[in-house]
Image 1 (cartoon, rainbow, N blue to C red):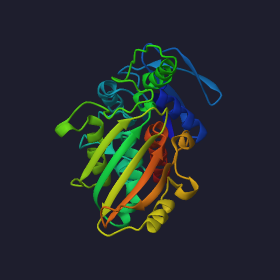
Image 2: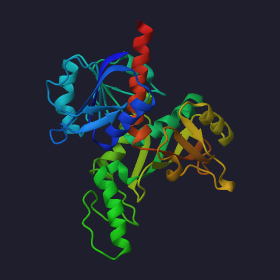
Image 3: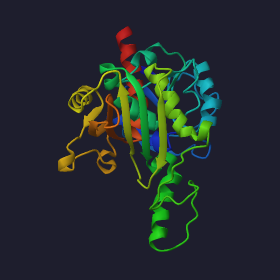
Length: 338
């Protein structure tokens, strides 16, 4: 059991879900501390029937803390997390800053738990769209090695933070009443629209979000040369990212075998009966921790291809749940080593 656990970004959307999961899953620690910006310091937060008061995040606040779960912007993670490590804490970080650092483990517990166990200092949690995809790819790769991946994502506005969700709600209200609305997060109206750019433009016309999926997937699966093409689209859905994933494998994986592989893999729920209109929907998957897979079918354009639909709650498995699962993994390791 950890002595003292600190949650950085406890007032944010992901931080609040982290606290909820720590309570629901009865994560054991002698002490929990909540850290956030000076603006939030002093705010009381109910946790396990007690009132915890948020402390200001500073460089010297980590004394005697041995586990940190952090959900902050990249610049905050870059500035403060080394201080937590220097104070002796293990850090599970949700930001993008440390993910591709070669000295930092990038972990999804269902896929590479050994990386978390062997890690020292900071353990990174992947981008939300990467996380659900690699969970779905892993059982296929174990059955027949992947040779190519093509993915198109349809990403919820909650992935852009509180302002993104507000833009969806207020922008929709304005559009329905023919009123003007000044979008805060998105460069184009999100109401009744689709925006085929998430992040800044990078190499050869791909965006930063798309290249995150490429590089993070390769790192997590240990496939440095795996060909991956990603297109990331923001759509007017409040929560849960959806993806169309097409894979090519060394030998064909028939849809029937793929269903069995998905069903047997921890953290995946199969919902796949297209004639009956049963497949994963964002409205059904919101608030749940699994990765949901459906529309499993042969790729008609390639003899070794398979295509499927994948949905997951981007705030839970795509962020908070993955971080808490890493913490649980580390906790079990500590107990086993005693």
